[in-house]
Image (cartoon, rainbow, N blue to C red; front, top):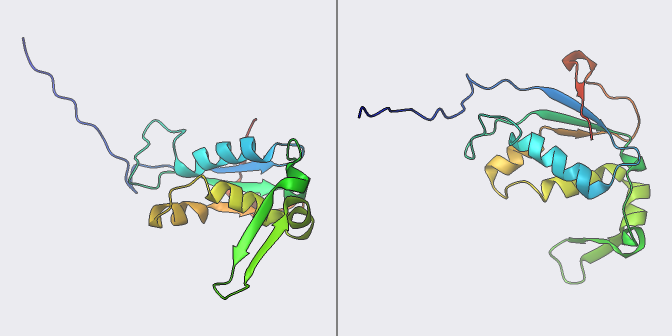
Length: 147
């Protein structure tokens, strides 16, 4: 019997095709929306996904303030920051942070689902979150992401 050899092709800068997607966060659950966004940023939705290469697409999120959280998370979920100094730890509820800086809630949720290395930091730069319904990326002709 003859031996057939197939070579696995790894994605690289020449072979990938990056697309732009837009997500309307109105009435979408934060966690479920974030997992889909993280998958697209990472490139796992493509047939030529390569773990050591950033083959993901760009994602624009609009209406970030209208995202929903299930259960009692609005009152119970806390976002903590630490300055590094004694007494420099601060905590803020999801309700307050969503009112004050709604973009941060989505950015932190998605960033937590990406790799914790240089590659993950590069992937998170392809996420653009906006509070209103307008975004400055019309020239890229983003496609609507279905949920």
